[in-house]
Amino acid sequence: MTSLGLPETAVPYGYDPTPSTSNLADILERILDKGIVIAGDIKIDLLDIELLTIRLRLFISSVETARKAGIDWWETDPALSSRAAENALARENRELRDRLAELEGGGRTRTPKRDRVKGEA
Image (cartoon, rainbow, N blue to C red; front, top):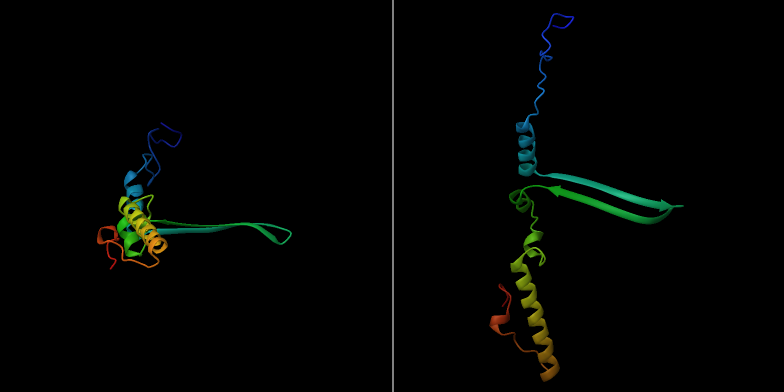
């Protein structure tokens, strides 16, 4: 018993000593569902001369939310997408073939259908 007559295991009203993981899960779900933007600028000046500027933009969301916002750079980045890497290689191959044809024959020839990137005529 304490000096107030309360048992020693008593906790203040509304206080839960165990961490609540459901709150963290709810927050994370909301962030991924809605998205969150964190923006900031770091500027280093010396005698009114700008030496360095770093602009930070961070967008945290689920893939679905990012697509709704029109962000899909991971689909077209060759370092992140095998399909984008194949398209980049096919485009480079086509450009080299066209350039070689110009140098050899003095005219532009059509790229063979097998070397065209999907969606090109």
